[in-house]
Length: 461
Ligand code: ARG
Image (cartoon, rainbow, N blue to C red):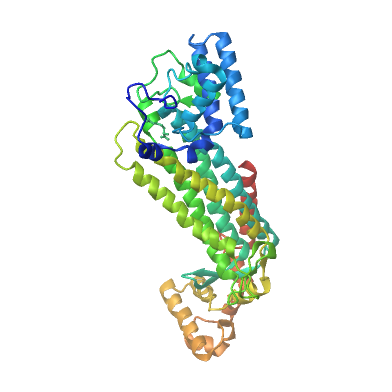
């Protein structure tokens, strides 16, 4: 049983079905670069502790560099008998450094502390890629917000016309949510910046190896404070899965709007040909598949999160083999987003807004009724009564099939003596927008401020 890392006390190799169950190279092979980096750091710390002499260290690093090059070129790949990435790479090292030297690297480390460290390293670099891609979507939104500043649209609640808002205000609402996700990744990275290497199987290392030295070589600020926690905790993976799922969910909300906006009924946007798909049977079709895939993948990302949480629930300390199930869901979340986000950013960036239609619909559905009520409040009418009066105006208009601004002076007084002709001044979309000028409001000046703040966030990130 020469290929296994644990054959010593066993009479024979594992049953074929056990080996098949146990095997993880088909998904953990992607950790090979991190595994080799970990091995080099470990060789250095063994040398520092006097467990490898200068020549042995030099030969070990040479062999590991050769192994890394062979992994990159594809000359070295996992064999059918290799249990996991760590086993495969130890075989590769022994093939290159000989069994004598190659066999020395295992001292003072375990696959338990290895895998916990390599997984963190992989996710930290993956998270940086995703964060950059999310910022590309934010850029695309900010670009439209900038280009369309001043364009009004129907703001909705319950999907019903509510109040007019600036298109830019609406688009930047999505941008803020995505910027918080980027901030979450940054914050997560600060917590994940701790290396478990040197925790051994669970109890720590007895060989005088300095885990801080290893941590710094692998790009971590420090080593874990507790070797049991280091090898058994996976909250870093669950938290990553959450932030990735949140990104998927935030993107899916914009995706859903794009899907609606691109319908004949809404006609708010047109998709660029390069970012839309056709139908194999209906020649006229132009489908929003990118947005639909975004909406669909959100479900998958949430599934990855809940699957991992369920795996972790009630797991006793320290390492249990259940933890091998931690990687596929989070890898899948990273993979899903890294393929989705560039397409999504491209689709968003190339949307063409039908601004005439947005403007035309902005005041419809009596969306200025709140402005009547607030005008009355400014005249000293209690809001309760003002709300009633504005509602009565809507009722009159609905019955007669007219809009609020069509009510003449007599109509207004008939509804309430408080309604003087001056109320008509607020019955315009630009007036309604400009009046929402407090911080966070949809007034053009505030939206301009917002855009500047978003741009500043993008540059910082
Ligand atoms: N491949 C395992 C994992 O991904 C690491 C190996 C630990 N195996 C063990 N028997 N302790 O979690």
